Image 1 (cartoon, helix red, strand yellow):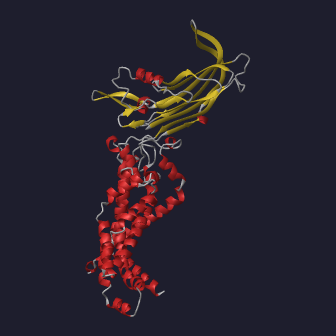
Image 2 (image 1 turned 135 degrees about the horizontal axis):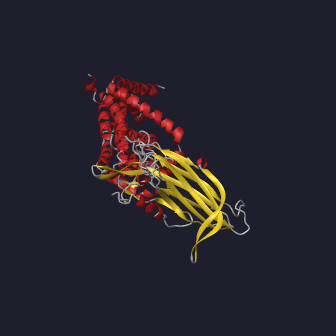
Image 3 (image 1 turned 90 degrees about the horizontal axis):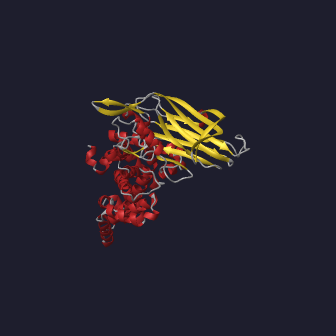
Length: 514
């Protein structure tokens, strides 16, 4: 109980000095905010969302968030987005009609059936969608001899964009899907992923031909423009140059299916029917929230939140373990004034002289197959434990010369009793100050390793976010929000402990209290 009293008094004095400083008050408040956010993130998002976030593009991300969308506060011409689903479609139902087919000697007309799905929507915006995501499933019965699908979008000016106009296989479901998103600034692939599942080749000839007809002789070059701007745009001349602006008005999606069942098979029977099995059009917003999204359609704000617990984990684990080890080591080195103390100091000096970052990079590369945040923390502890030894040893040398220590030694007290009852409680404030001031360096070191590709690939740390921004060439492409906000998170988190460390400085330098 007596030993615990000394430790409590030491902590109490440290806390009093911190709270007396304005820097300490601000730092403590910021620390509490981060702790509350970390607790909320762990309770609300771990582990499912963390796993999905680190996996990058999956079956859910592209259909929930836009790619590379800037923060909404930075966009003047906003487009809020639109989601059209299967239940929104209208249909004419199955109708008899005459189908034109290509025969051996030219077109021939035969009796068949026609099925139309359509949906009209109003587009009124000063901005363009960031992405156009399309999924359409068509089922064809086994006893259907011929089926053709024509997939079009009619614009307010009457022009049509054809997404698909070809036959599909019978006896299976064919999915036509596409993602007409910008891949990097100034370029586009037209249209990304638009294909039939039963084939491997991209199907975009219809799409390109439609755009070439619409923008023929307008001066607009199809290649370097964004697909979504070409779909929902019109040309105006600005200072003699053709410029794309939104074409507002009513658009109509139409999926026309013509088919011929086998002789004697009803178009309403399971083997003779043709129908849509799925449908979704998503016009993605051109901005997202306060922090935007990255190149894999992940909310940057969510990444900032997910990184808080990892910042505490790596910062506190490495700092307090290494500082505690260094403090005990330095206390022993200061208490023993013989060859044992000198030997301990030479070992600490050699460790301190090592180039930490290059060694960490090499070790991280060696253990890259099994690298985790805890493995990385262990490697950092092996290298950083010696940092506080010199300061702690200097304090231990002075304290060990005090009369009460000499009295304890003369009364026959053992080494452990003298150290942990009389010396270490006096050194504890120094240890806390060193630990608090060391946390920013640990966080930045982890971020640097992650930026270089040597971090934990499964942990959504702020350093990992910076690595993703670097890999996607965010600076060149103008996606400033993908690296600015993680960088600011590192700065603010580090500043929290620097402010607290500033408040603890009077403990290390008592003259500052005057």
